[in-house]
Length: 200
Image (tube, rainbow, N blue to C red; front, side):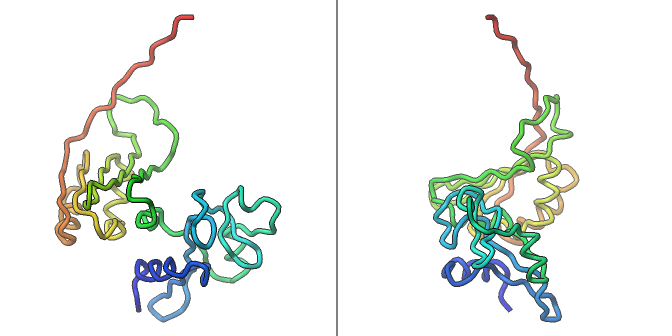
């Protein structure tokens, strides 16, 4: 049985032939269907998919689905009688242009002004440096997620910098060692700043 990563790679080699990848449990029963996050069978629309076409199940963004009969992912799951979800964001990394970087954060909103990162959820930043892929991560929530999903990081990742690993450091060291990834642990940085008024 192939891994989810291998299945997604095969799915993306013939995107028009499939609408998702099935994940089976240890008894061989279909447990869920994983759909790609990009709009269209070829991912030719750069916007993220939010619904599927009601008949072809083709993934569509809000713009491309205007005027069409569509289903939300939960509605698709109810129709098929099987759990459905969008693929993890990291699965999109191989499909991005090599000149593009990827930042994953829990929220796109600016964090509250605080003097330390104690309450900061953080972000993961992936970028290419020639043939190398480098990652930088910080924030309590993000680092906790990283420990749980370290195997989902890109296969070509060679170096990762973690700011403020704290109690997660031993698990990160072990995970990086298993995958032969260079790990740089940085001290927790401070987030300070002020807001100045503008004279009118």
